[in-house]
Length: 117
Image (cartoon, rainbow, N blue to C red):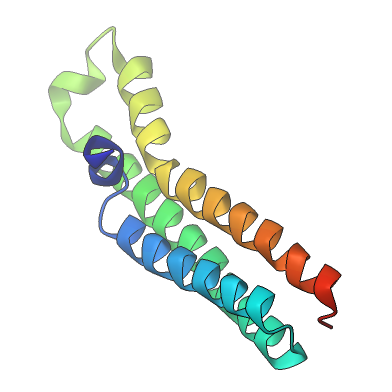
């Protein structure tokens, strides 16, 4: 798990924080269904989505910047593998963030069923 978090760079920590906050808000909504609590889940979800987009964008930009800076990589027959590895690492914030959001909204569905908004 730590390798996964490390691959995501600094931005993945914001994704984790916003994702966990969204999850906590969804649990609060299940316990007390109220339109204001659902609005909080929605707002935190947006923050999580934007943090995912920012983290993935920053990671892809880092790959695009770093690969050309290493002359030995440009001459390596493994260049496609180097780029593919960078892209895969860049997507870790999306994997974490969208997984957390999926769980949070699954929980939120129970609050909606209980009588929320």
